[in-house]
Amino acid sequence: MTFTEQTIDEFLSGVASSQVAPSAGATAALTGALAASLCEMVCIHTSEAKRSERLADTEAELREQRGQLLALADEDAAAINEVQAVFETDTDEDQEQAALRTATEIPVRIAERARDVVACATVVAADGNPNARADALVGATIARAVVASAAAIVRANVGLLEDDAFVTDVQRRVESAEADANAAVARITGQDE
Image 1 (cartoon, helix red, strand yellow):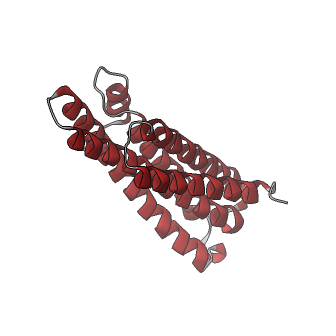
Image 2 (spheres, rainbow, N blue to C red; image 1 turned 90 degrees about the horizontal axis):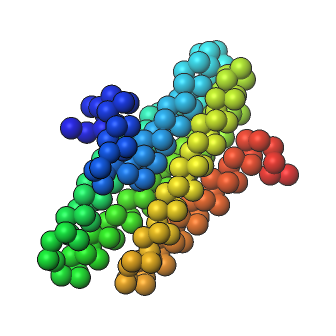
Image 3 (cartoon, rainbow, N blue to C red; image 1 turned 180 degrees about the vertical axis):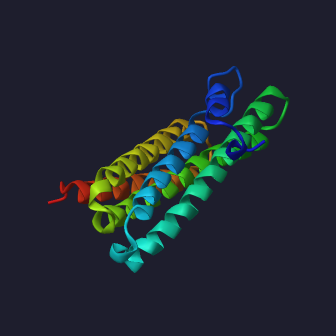
C-alpha cells in the first residue's frame, strides 16, 4: 500500500510505531506535498479573470511537484527498509554502502523538489489571489522547512558513506537547495532587499 492510499491517521500511526519506516524522509516528502497543495489552492482560488498564464503554468508545476514528493515518500520508506535489511543480514560492505547511498540520494531529491515548490510559491504570492497570500507564504515556509529537514537527513547520512565524490555532490546539492529556498522565501516576505 502506498502512502497515497493511506488515511492521514494511518500514515501518522506508521511513523509513530516500532517500524523503521516511514521515518524522517517520508515525513518530509509528505509535508512537501502538503506545501505544494496549499500553493495549488491559492491558484485555484484566483479568479479566471485575474489568473495569468504564468499562474496557470505554476499550478500545473505544483501538481507535478506534489505527485513527485508523494512518490519520494514511498521511495524513502523503501530505501530505509532496505538499509535495515542490509544491516540485519550478513552482507558485504558494498551492499551496505549502496543502500546508504540510495537512502541519502532520496532526501536530496526531496530537498530539490521542495525547493521547486518554494520557487513556485513566489509566483503564487505575486500573481495569486491577494486574499490568499498568507496561504502562499505558509506553503513556501513549509516547503523551506522540508528543504532544511531533508538536508539534515543528508548531513546525518554522509558520515556513514565512503564515496567522497558522492558525498561532495550531495552536500553541494542540498546547500544549493537551501540557499535557493531561503532566497525565495525572502523575496516573498520582502526581506531580500
